[in-house]
Image (tube, rainbow, N blue to C red; front, side, top):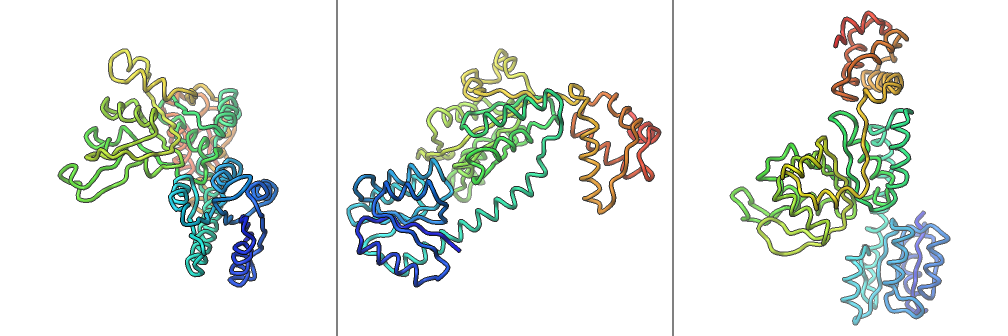
Length: 387
């Protein structure tokens, strides 16, 4: 059952809206508010699937209600109701996050179509949340070492803010996992999380990948294309291996961070974006700065919060937990029962030099599970996981 709030100071129009909606579906639960202040009070104290809100109202207008509501319950879709003179304002509210706007007097079909679409979107968001919880199991942060505990505590403090984060650490330590956790625990978790591997994209294509391009900008640009920053709007963009980004692209990323605007390759038109930036690197960026390969001003923009992910050799006490975690997951993937690792096998694995970090350990655990007998012994580790 969908719960809908109608905020409208003109009682005749409010009654018409409530009547239309109640006739559309008996499953709609309808609440009414005669001004913006009362409507906002309803929103604070109850959960609604949709709000229909007039723009011109005494005490508090609809734009103010929308802006205040987005701070406390950003997931609620708003359909704004506009008089003829409010049309420009109504269009502006779409940029501020409104789902749609309806002109007065309300057209029955237009209103009901918009309401159905808004409620369908809400249902899709709820499904995505459920799916995200399942997907997030792929990004569990396993470990109880002091270093990992400190990172978890830092994420809890940083994630709810919009502060930019720079994650450092060797390859395979779990920098991507930290970025996912920051996004999933943030206010932007319902919006996209877009990953860009800066090292995997040729330098001549990185700007098009990040900022998009217009048709004809270069030989293969056969149509307009949105870039990663546009796709990540209202969400998070994760710039992995940012130390490999060209100086030209760095300059453009700096502009986005300063002005919250991008322009597609081949266009001089500015497009506003609202994106949280999380970056990661396995390089020493201060050394890269001293050698002229990385912009110092960009570094300071990105490194508002610094999180260093330790190597596996620095957190050996977590290896037994990681072996158990990977063992359970691999068994589930293969439809088999988990194999027991003997204490001697675990101790031997703890003693190894893990140059490939978590990624290498996961591969070794999988190899041992496939090649060993009913349990994984110290001898199996010596045979199949020789370093």
